[in-house]
Amino acid sequence: MRNYSFAAPSINEQKRIAELLSSLDDKIELNRRINDNLEQQAQALFKSWFVDFEPFRGEKFVKSEFGMIPKGWYIGSIYEQIDVVYGAPYSSSLFNESNNGLPLIRIRDLKTYSPQVYTTEILPNTEYIATGDVVAGMDAEFIPTIWLGETGILNQRCCKFIARDAMVSNYYVLHLIKPELEFVQSYKTGTTVSHLGKCDIDKFRIIVPPNNIVIKFSKLVNALFREKVRIASESRNLTTLRNSLLPKLMSGELNINNLNC
Image (cartoon, rainbow, N blue to C red; front, top):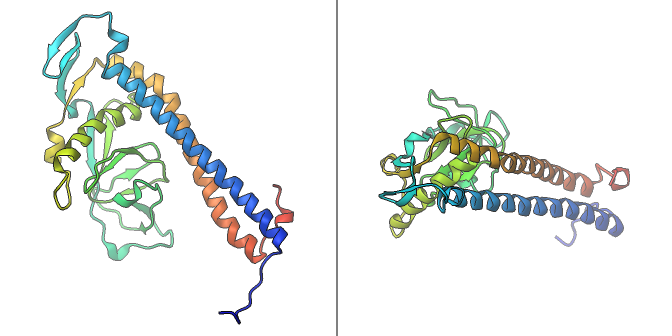
């Protein structure tokens, strides 16, 4: 290996390249922290409205199986507010890494928002996932997340949660479903590999507020939601730019002196 020779930029150019790429990394990290903060704000608002009932303290409360709740609210099935759609089984023999077809969103991709394989296969029950949809895995960890990657299709053992009313924010959907999934996770921990099934979701019981209150909350948090999606899109573009610049700058295909930076 000591006899191997290769072309490399000068030390000064290498330092300038490192500074440029570091600035992109810093912006991506800043965006991540901003989005974490937006998520915390939405979660705090949900807790204030639908757990602690702070905006409704002056109203009459009634007993329920979940404790005291505002009059006019009731306990019902998760399906009164949310539809659940399940991913389909795609043939691994048709998977590719050459961007042929659409990204296949698997459980492993829900944390990174970066699908690793594509497929051209379209099934009768193919379910498309867009930026901003609420999705969760059904094996090992059942942590719901707002999908922040590119549009793709949902693989088996993943599911999507959809508000039955189009005016309801996905932030409401996320925080409504999250404690239910965490509860299932808690009592299935200890098994070899814990699994979430439709039969588990069928048992979910929630506090159901009047629809006008849910829509009022949705209007309040939708600005946070839109900003989160916008920032995530910006970070994807920055990541793509960073990953494409590095090899071109190091190989000399691009000259950092010609970049407007």
